[in-house]
Length: 582
Image (cartoon, rainbow, N blue to C red; front, side, top):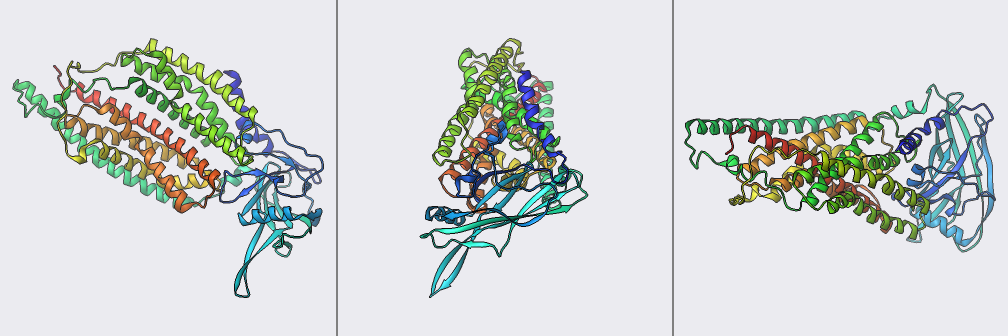
């Protein structure tokens, strides 16, 4: 356990040293080549030298940590050399002859809008390989392909540290590679410009990126106000209705004349409302996994607000998610075991296994399939065998034992359900209700309101995860997450009341589906984003997008469904404690 905590600390804070490296004029600065890939397909990445760039004779690879491997980094020492505070222009990088197959490879890359990523002093530098232009000749459109051969690097510094680096190309230095039938000589050159700044550190540079801050705050404030007005309106109505119910039931008890008309609604089903749900093992596994995922999200957002994640600390988010998930497996086991004991379950082995594999099972199947897809494409996104072994060891030697220990503790230390009313032996028949008060319609209503609170920020999250925007406003994300949880809790409570008010006592499973329905709306937004907002294409990128987003939406369903159930449980206990049950 201590080793895992230490690994988490090292993986998350190791970039602090890299970002604070101090140089003197003329000192060598590490310059690595990382990867290339289509700009519109962020998951489709290949090693930099998979294209016929000029490479060093002796390949020197940098050793990677777990986070860098998870994001597909494969750093190789490049031929670029830019000593600290040494400007120059038109320095020769290399010259060689492009064979027809090399020209064809570059043409294909330019056609698919390939970009490259270089790493200068742990700073990612992005640029495009070339460009294409369409000319009209003899009444026909002809496409010309040009390879950029002169790179211009602009480095911002504060006198002792490198703050930022950017790339541009010389428009007068590009090679026409339209004809791929003959050999073509090429020479690559590069220049370095140094600009002084008063910024003292890279963290200040990140904080200075507004990311449309005013627009986002206004949009989020508008969403929050709308949601609060709606929830406040529902809350007021619900409290008034409950107050009237309590007064009516109290008056009936004082007069000791309880007619069928007076004892109607949710009091009439007091002998059925705490009847145990079907499929106890699955139900308890959902609750355990939901609490675990909720703890993981809270932990990730907490670290984000501390400033742990940045584009200098590559892969820290994935490492944090993996290790926090493993360390919170005991919470999963405890919650699922405790609830299973409350429901008087007997198949404990199956219940514990299900609580462990309910989320990890689909995750393992989809992640394995996507890794095979990446291997088939020879992509750097494919995880090496050693990394897969490390992940499996963390999940089997840490996560699974903690899950079992938590399940045993939950069984031994669980308190009774403490239901205010006794459950009758024969379940009461549920009367028919209008279509708009039936399960499917109410579940859809439950998912719409929480989704309306997050869809604005959802776009920026998607643009960061599935695009090339850098996300840094984690305070806004935390605020949106809290609103999501609160609104999900309240809307599920309201719909649970409407359900029991029509004498429908099957609220256990419906509260889970009502709370988790937002995950379905998020998946619908995924389809919209893929179709209308992104320019992703190809089998690999499509499978990665819908595979991993399907897992995210499934996790959101588990987490928010759990929030919905526990909120409804507390509400149901509250209203039935407030009346006299026979």
